[in-house]
Length: 484
Image (cartoon, rainbow, N blue to C red; front, side, top):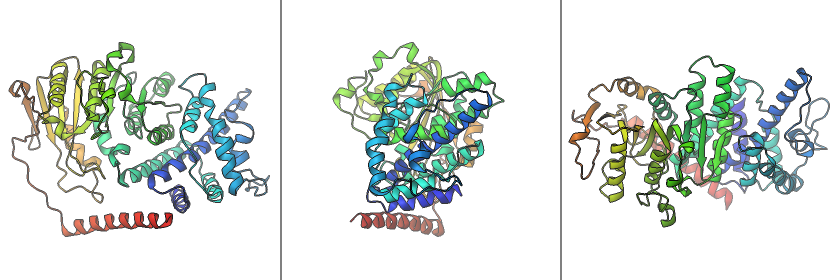
């Protein structure tokens, strides 16, 4: 039912003149889903309070409650179409009354780690893009059918929402900016192995995949005490995200995964001078896939000791600085970082090797990131001691990866198992840092076992890939025509 409802919502958004892409579909369905989630949460809290003979004061009240403006109902539980706003009346209410009312929660909330603050922050950033109040009416009534009342329902919803984010990432543009393949994230978390009580940080959170999967990993690691549950909810996961859409999606994703009031800040991480980072600002674990390829302005570069316009290299400096001594990191970065000969790349590699134990480098094949045609590596390091030996693993799933052959968890099983003891194999080897050129600090992936054979796809795989791309192109053309 949930999946069908999501599809019907997308069909309505597709025909609205204000929504032109998969990004718009996710953004617009997100704010409606968020308000429905809050209404179900408030209902559950009210019941809980009544059972304990306590009074419950709702966060959202009066005409701004979901049951008042979105889906007023008759006594028999059906939509009261006489009371329900629609058309221009609905659109004007949402744009001119509802959103401004909710945006004020940010200034009235008691602290940033409350749901009230998140409501205010989200609705201070987002806009209703649906131009037709009639389309919005249809969306509201479809979303009202979705339930967030049991853990099973929320779990299913989180998976569907993940699929929407994945589709948005695959829609082109900066795919990897929004969606890091979940099998890769899970593998990184298993290698870093965070523990309850440690703080986990992602300064380029995007859709918050690293934080959501870390929450799932720790939640399932053992039978949690009440104190440990509270620690995971309030004192474990921290993130920052610059872009409004990614921030909204990341916040919603964390909430759907069970983190009630995410410690996710809407801010430009690179706008902070890393010289100002103090011990109290540091984290035990850093997990991230920072955006790469950007060209940062000179004033942003002034916040870093090693000046470079490459966004990812500035993020890497930030992560090294904000990691607590003894802390561990798993960072995705372009593989060219390992060998670039420019002064900044050489200086950052030198800093990384001299002050951190870069114990593992995972070399990912092309096609790991759908919609982003770059090769990447994952750097695993621990802060506070120099690197003596690096263990490399060259991931070779045995097929060319693409949209029809995405990365899966089985592909990474061998890496995870061998990494535990840094075992050598046809796909893994160790390099003593004393043998690395100390002028270039070149860390290129060079498999000494000569395992670099080219994997050719079968005709059936090639045809399937072409058909998938053709279907995408047809969908894009259809949307363009609808806007003309």
